[in-house]
Length: 240
Ligand code: GLN
Image (cartoon, rainbow, N blue to C red; front, side, top):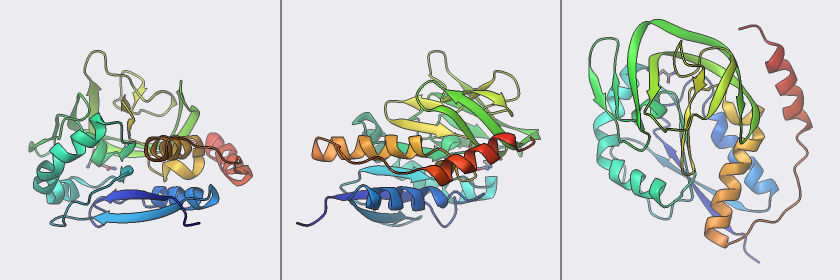
């Protein structure tokens, strides 16, 4: 019997892929295979044709210059991404892409990059870069850990659910203790590293949601995450 396919759209791997973000795709690929599904990777870069039949969307961070490179193209596919988000397609947007999934990002140089408005958030570039290891607590995923490096400080509109609450590090900004944002099955986060190898529960959320949406159910054996647990212990102890 042919395996059930899950299509993963990787947004802008050429221009938005720093601090190990590509590792998120590798984790989803491997875990889908271990669960007995067939991962089909769709790389999308500036100017490409936007694919159909997308089950999971992920994308990494980038320097202000990278965000400027993809900006016009992202606005052109924005309505499609927004429609997918409204229909519950699971998404993980990291740092620079997280900022552009919002309403706008005003860079340190004063350029305003309009966002695609999936997340009701605003970001402003500041001279103080927020850099270092992060540990935070999520009501959905428990303890989450990663690495941040950004000039942008992000503010959630009233009523927007943060992804987590910071216990070590900065997260969205240097003030309110929130990290990331949640909307339907969309996760926006500042956490690089990459985030999924050390936080497999988040990977499983994306996978379970996609499989249940496409095939109506998800039943499989648990994966032995010993190595990930060991990595978490090390990450938790790392100095800021
Ligand atoms: N360029 C953005 C900032 O500095 C995002 C950086 C990133 O993706 N790490 O805030």
